[in-house]
Image (cartoon, rainbow, N blue to C red):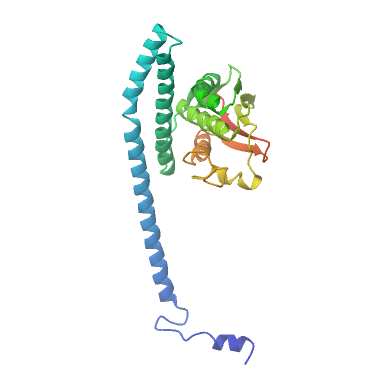
Length: 270
């Protein structure tokens, strides 16, 4: 036999649940719902654990950083060019980087759980850019990169200073990692009540097919883990979340072998 009748005859007989198997389907749906609920609880527990770990990692470093700063200041007054002063300056930078990494973990956890509350205030953009670039100068020098800054002094943002610092730190760090030792430029312009902040490098660039992916958690521009720089793979995801939380956004312009330019848009202080 052929045709619709043959296809109907081929359907296995219905069990006790009935012809449409509605009872079996209901059981499967209920099982899936229980599994989803269990996964959500596991994710919530993971995020809570991550927040606790980040908090415990960061807090003990605050008094340590204070002591390092005190010793750095004393050594700089006694022998500014001495090896002790230079070593303490390097130690201070390493401790600050450690604190920043712990803060990144904490911010990721807060963003994921919807607890990332940002308070807007007037923030001078040029001042924050200068601080971030200065803190990353040892990393840039080690990579063979120079960082130039062209940010007008009159650009005052309406944002949270720590979040802005985190955005700039992630973007400049990213440019140093993937900039292939080339020049890096940080600039900003005013445009209709907003500031457009650009961080550009001349490095390996990012393929168009990867440009959306790298803004997701645990993703990187380099697909091969053996060749990718060390990191959590959350920097650009956090940049996007922080920028959007402050009423702005982030965009990317890049081609392989021609570098990359990340543009963050944030509101200006009225």
